[in-house]
Figure 1 (cartoon, rainbow, N blue to C red):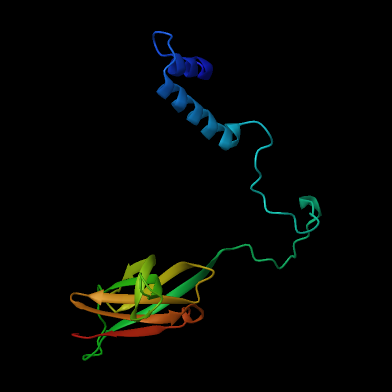
Figure 2: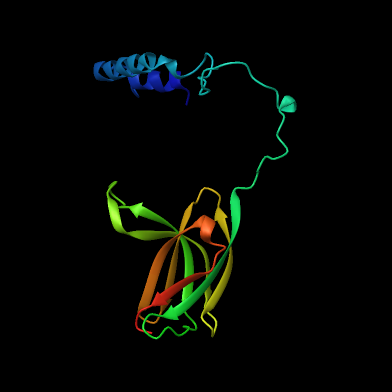
Length: 175
């Protein structure tokens, strides 16, 4: 049923007699539609930001040869897991590399300990306590969180991404 047909049915009713309450409702409906601008016609609204200058065609862009396109950085992690009291290698320790956050989830207050966020890479220590990971870090990360756990013991340390290629030793308590 078209809008006109529906409107005439509301005004006249089923028996064709004008109903004043229906007429009032129909006029209110028409006034509401008119107030909304009619719901059509005209040019569509543009969501584009206003132009701030001249535009450069894509074919005239010159990219320097030294441009780094990568959004990741490949970093190696060489880790030695030793017991805190014994100084002996700890085998089968789980090693995880995380991005992390130092802020609370509901505030901008700094936390006492960094909170792991996204797992970047993981591995297990060998019989000699060594672990080697070849991780691809997001290029914007300057620090990562290394978490080592074996049984109930665990230790975590924040490491500068630039230091990941250097050997690192973590000591677990209880071993």
